[in-house]
Image: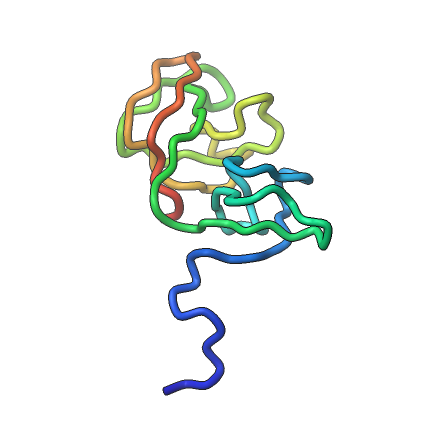
Length: 118
C-alpha cells in the first residue's frame, strides 16, 4: 500500500480558504478553484474544515449577469462579486461550484439542494 497517502478519501479537508476571506460554518467556499462548504468557522491558524463533495442546502439566486431562472441540473457558480448570494448561474464572473438540484425562479433567491463539485 502506498505510504504517501495522507487522507484516503480526501473529501473533508483542513485548508486555508481563498473565498470568502473569513468563512463560517455552512458558507459556500472556494480553495482556489476547488468548491466546498465550510464545516467549521475559520480557526486561529487561518484554516477551515471544508467538505468538497456531497450535497448541501445553499442560498442560490436565479441570475447570471442579469436575472435568469435556474432549473434542477443546471451548473451553478460561486460569484465572489455577487452580494449577498454567492451562488448563481454566472459563468462569466464565477467559479464552477456544482449543480442545483432544485429550481430557482428568475431573479429569486431560494435555499435549495446543491451538489458540490463536478
